[in-house]
Picture 1 (cartoon, rainbow, N blue to C red):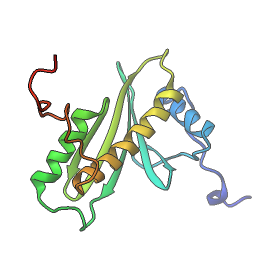
Picture 2: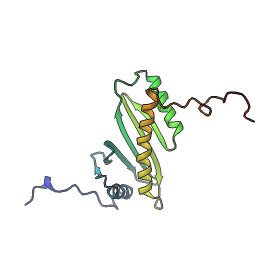
Picture 3: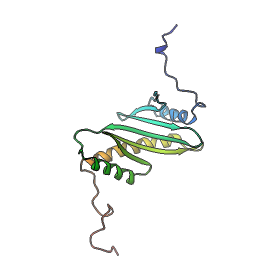
Picture 4: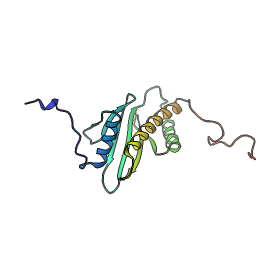
Length: 162
């Protein structure tokens, strides 16, 4: 008999977790080699970053694409500055939230999904939004990438633009 530890890890049947099955299919089609972890989250690596998809099944199906990053010592340590930067990212980007849990940055993109939703497109755009959110957070907290011109919360110089 073959050693059971050498068998591949097959995903659960699609009808057991329909949204998770659709997410797994989408990630496999993108050659991202997803795995279901012990929490039931779909884990995968893209652009050398570990990301996850949590699927909530029930009356409403919710797909949450997220990543977690340890905040380095090079980042300013003031908690208010860190949280304010999270707030800026959350308010600026559509369907993306940034938050902190101790010294861990968490960036998520969440969607309500139904039978007609284009899950592969939602997965793909969510991955890009999460990665962009992390990059923007880092650029902002390190003092780069700030828009200080008109439209950045300050009135344009010179008064009325008539």
